[in-house]
Amino acid sequence: MKKITTLVLFVFLLTAAFLSAEGSKEEGTKTKEPQVLTISTWGYNMDLLDKNITVPFEKKYNVKLVYEKGNNSSRLTKLAARKDKPIVDVVHFAGNYTFKAIEQGLLQPYDPSKLPNLKDLYKWAQDPLGNRYGVGYSVSHYGLFYRTDKISKPITSWRDLWRPEVKGYVTLPDIATTNGPATIILIAKAWGGNENNVDIAWKKLESLKGSIVNTYRRSSELTTMVKQGEVWVGPYASFAWGNLLKTGFPLKSVVPEEGLVGFMSVVSIVKGTKKEDLAYKYIDFLISKQVEEAEAMDLVDSPTNTKVKVPADIAGKLTYGDKIINSLIFLDQKKLAGLQKDWINRWNSLMTK
Image (tube, rainbow, N blue to C red):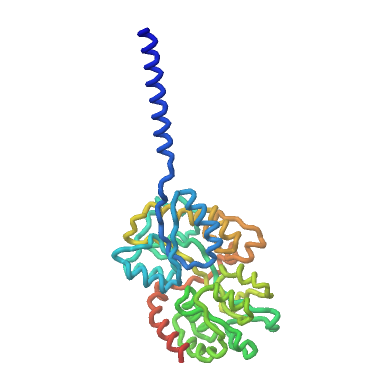
C-alpha cells in the first residue's frame, strides 16, 4: 500500500512539474507589446516603402514604425524644436540638411561595428558627411525630362527652359527641397556661371518666372502636374522617374549639357534617442542587399549597396551601373548648407514679386 501511495505521489509531482514547465514555456513565447521607433522621412512612395521596409522590419523585430513626414526644411525645424526631448529616433535628410542638423547638435555619430551591412556600400556612401554622422543609403541623379508629343525639338540643356514654346508649361522644385540648391548651380552653369558664381542664375530666374506654371515641394506634386497636363518640361530626381512614367505620357529623360548632379539620401541617428539599438537595426536593415534590391526593383531608390543586381530594363531607370555612377557630380553639401538660408530668402523674395 505504501509503495502504491509513493508511486501515485511521484506521478503527481512529475505531472505538476511538466505542466509547470509547459506553462513557463507558453509564457515565454507570448508576444510582447511592440516597441515604437519613430522615423522622420519625406513620405514619398509610402505604399512601396511599407511593402519593402515597414512591414518586414516590424515583423522581424516586433517593432511598430511611426513616421513623421514632410520636406527637409519643416522636419529639420521640428527636430530642432524638440532638441532637448526628441520624439524622432531616426531621420532621413538630403545631405545639406544633414549638415544643418549636425551644426545644431541634433545627430549623433554612428558606430560602424553595429552596422554589419555598411561594408557593402560604395565607399563614398559609408560616411558621406564625415565624422560618421550619417549613411548614404540611396543615390539619385538630377536631370531634365520633357514630353515628346508636345516638344518636337529635343531638350538638351537647362537653357531650353527659356524657350518661348514651353512658356506656361515649365516647373522647378522649390528652393527648400533636396534639389533646390542644385537648380541654382545648374542654371548658373547653363548661362556661363558656376558653383562659385551664381549671380547669373538669379537674374535668369527672374526672366523664367513667367514661364513657370508652378513649383513643387514633393515629387508627388510633380507627378500630379504632369498627369494633369500642366507640365511639359522640367527637372526631376531619378527616384521619381517610375511614377512619372506611370502618367502614360511619352516622356524622355535627358542628360543635359550641364551634367548630372548626384545626391544621396542620408539616414542618421537622432541625438538623445532612447531607442539606439533599434535605430541601428533599422539603418542596417535599410542598407541590406535585400531591401536595397527590393527598392530598386520598384523604382523607389537607387542602391548604394554594391551587391545589388537588377536587370537591364530596371537599371536604365535608376542611378545604377559603373558608367552613370562614375559620371556623377557631387556638390559641396557643407557649402550649400551655409548658403541655404540666404538662398531661401532670395528665392521667396523673387517668386512673390
